[in-house]
Image (cartoon, rainbow, N blue to C red; front, side):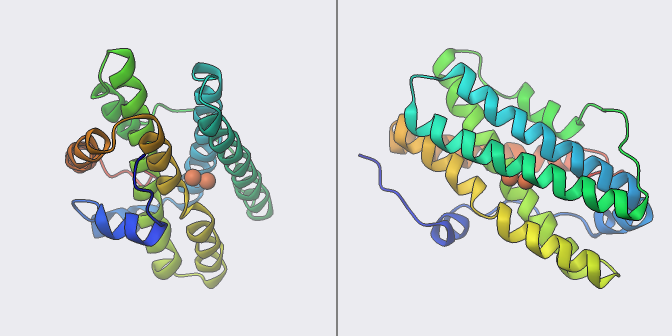
Length: 202
Ligand SMILES: [Fe+2]
Ligand SMILES: [Fe+2]
């Protein structure tokens, strides 16, 4: 049985390599309505990605429980962002492919077991990068109302990366998960470097 660890230990044990560039927050502020629309799209896509786990892996009840719970939370986040956009008169924008996610998914292994583990670990890391960026917004956005808005997101997203990592630990051998996660931390950092900073979420 794998050793399960708490959120704080998880975040301390597996820190991201490479912090988000200060240019990112600058671009976000310059393009804020487009950034918020991209954030809304990311919440919707995160919810769909969780439900995809439910469809693909129905024989893993713990994962189905966790993924469907997080799908619900991400959909609620989408609604929160959308309601805030309406208050500010910000429009939803046509869907765009996310370069960061595309580059990460290119590195997912092709065999069924590798693919399953990698998808869980990618979801975990995307969530961890997300909270790093919510934290930046929660301290660096020039308007208090938006700092408060993103503080709430930071807290409600904080457990997601840990949850996907734990599901991987429940399904695959502990050391394989840890070794692959260390590789993914490096891959994610490289992908972050390669992703142009445009003022989108990623
Ligand atoms: Fe979310
Ligand atoms: Fe999340």
